[in-house]
Length: 190
Image (tube, rainbow, N blue to C red; front, top):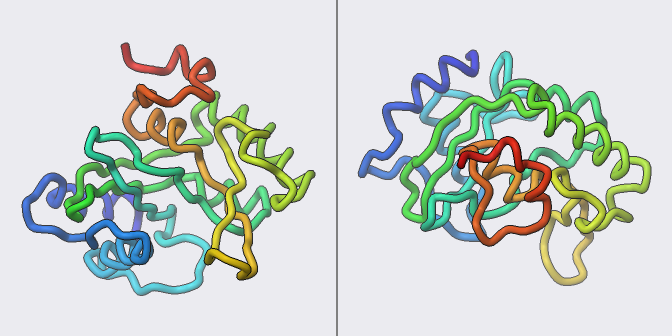
């Protein structure tokens, strides 16, 4: 299935009262993607991309209509692999009740700001090693711990910071966010 076709299949569910995705909890984050895959008739698998030409990603929207948390990309630290994942991304946002609030196709690396910082920050993370790179080292692309709490083995995944994801999806910088605001000065809706 092509990304555009998936987009057209999901759009009728935006802002509908009947919930398509899982309600918000910390334990069922993968359930949202699985619900969309089922809706689209996509068989879950281990292939690199969800669609023939792109990737499906879900995110949570808070009560203010902003991206609720950092936006996870992947845990494989290979720049070409990451670029392929970001070439054509169908992002679907849902609220705490599970209702789809947002659906959009994005191409982050076609945006000059995201591309510039991708080249700088992902190279930095890879050169230092994801486990040796703090979120304080980067502004848009961050290495963030992924995995269970406690003493369990942890890994790092690549994320787009919450404020940057909000700019990418909605064209607005979250009111209370500070880090990176000046990067998006010319991109933000007035």
